[in-house]
Image 1 (cartoon, rainbow, N blue to C red):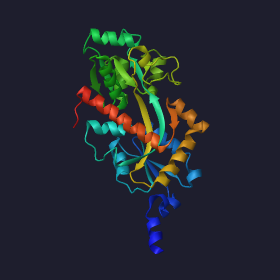
Image 2: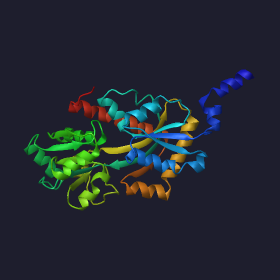
Image 3: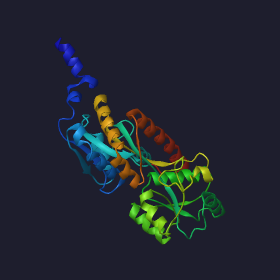
Image 4: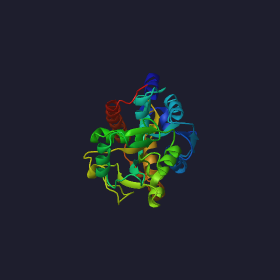
Length: 313
């Protein structure tokens, strides 16, 4: 009989740890304050105390690698979460990481998606995606685009656009969104596939011109903008995908409890309002759905990276 109880206790689905979870504060890691990952982490941190009975503490660490490494190497007990996105996988395709994004993490919940906005400086003589393609083909290599980090969603979105249109547009990499925005507003660079929050006010004031959104379907966030796919590049899609991860081998019962709480918060009016106000569309769904999307996007972007000749360190 003792052997039976020991066996049951060692089974993740019925472990004592999973049954009692959580018995202490849960920590959610994100990069620098003010970014998208931090923004989403704080929405959930403000909403989980009542359901889980414990605080959810946001722990900011510099860059994207450090917070991910902490969670990858944490105990698989559900007390270490990571607010990140598909960049967790695509970043590992362009540089060596101290973790494997496909084996060291467990997908908990798909929190949000966000279309990018294809944006040009007003001096660029184009008003549509078709115009942009025509200009790029007429002047190979003359146009340039900014990206906020190598391997980031905006970077890969632009490379996918080049690959699907057969255009040559020069990549100008930056180490952050701030510097990239300064240069495109001044006209030093001409094009950017931008996170909506970075450009929306500049588009309203006429300092930048928005051409289209990168999602497959029209976005409720930008109802007046067409999609890239509908205006010159059939089948094109590249969006920011955000989610919550935890350490691999965390008991399934814990993963599902976290998923239920996160989805519950996503469905609240307050969370929806805040996320839509920050140009993010709430998603939700099961851990399996997020895991499948995460892996399929990683595989798709792997092909883009190889086709572009992007250096993989």
